[in-house]
Amino acid sequence: MSFDTVVGHADARAAIERSIVTGRLAHAYLFVGDDGIGKRTLAIAVARALVCERRGEFGDHVNACGKCGACIRVARDSHPDVLVSRFDAAAGSVKVGDIRAMEEFLQRTALEGGYKVLVVDGAEEMTDAAANAFLKTLEEPPPHSLLILVAQSTSTLPSTVASRCQVIRLRGLDEVDVRRVLVEQASVPDDEATALAAASGGSPGRALALRGVDVLAEAAALTREIVSPSRDSIEAAAAWYRCVRESNKVTYNQASARLRALLLLAVHAVRGSLRRSLGLPGDGLLREETAAVSAVRAQAVLQTLLATLECLDKKAHLELLLEDLFLRSRIDVAGSDVPIPLNNAWEAVEI
Ligand SMILES: [Zn+2]
Image 1 (tube, rainbow, N blue to C red):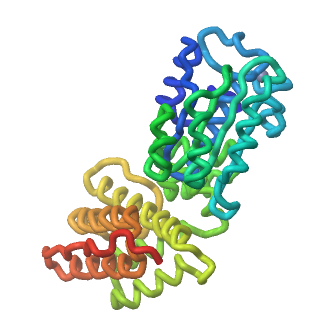
Image 2: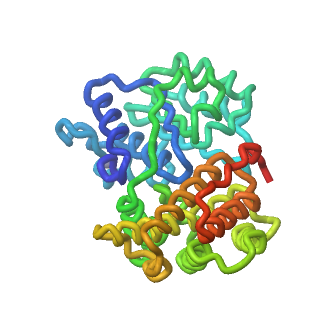
Image 3: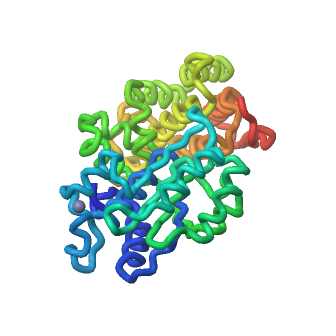
């Protein structure tokens, strides 16, 4: 994949491209953004653009040919001047020993005479001791070396590390771009890609993690239950909690991601219904489930769904959140316009 073919992130790409073309590349970048939106992909594309043997043949544009020996070696993770370190919680933290290995890599003379690029994915997993050991390298990296740290947010990294990097914030992709990534890079069939993209919240990685779950069927059932409540809200909440949690092996984050996907699809369905009732073209997803919903009802349900998603971002207790969602749906059906306040005490509750 060349720099130009990275999907989305146009602003970030343009900023880095300008820096490369004008010779003002920072010595250390920190790419931050949600899980699965392509931060590491962009970092590797930058590395490839810097080591491509045909670098400089693309006029004012920064690109990599994707075909030369250097490009192929980067793709195979075997280029001697590009080191991609991946860390995740399951693999353990970034320790001082790991930092030493990275420093040794940067100290070696570039074998191919150009840039050396170190990508540290999962940089938030750095222990304090590792971060301290890394500071000197961040302050004075060897010449012709580029460091790209990748993390979900600046707040998850020691401030001493974040403050020494040029921070580039990456946002989620548009749905059409997520769909493109799924179809072109992961060979997901068209229909499935449309549903997964709508459920992804802008993250191809999250969309791919949902493969194997029939999110559309689950979202259809959830949408029906919200727009036309037919059972006690506690019973409904317990059933849907069991659905997204499945077993004790499913972590809070995994269950939360599945619920988010279902809620995003329900938002699609209800927003589509609202748009159609206003004479505007609406989303085709889950059209049947909302066919009989009035515009007033759709608007109320939409607000409830959006408030629920906001609470999910704050790591709300899932079962209580579901109970609140179904309770609000029922009260709305009964014609009451008294909103139930969201319980702020739910914030930051971890299961
Ligand atoms: Zn090349």
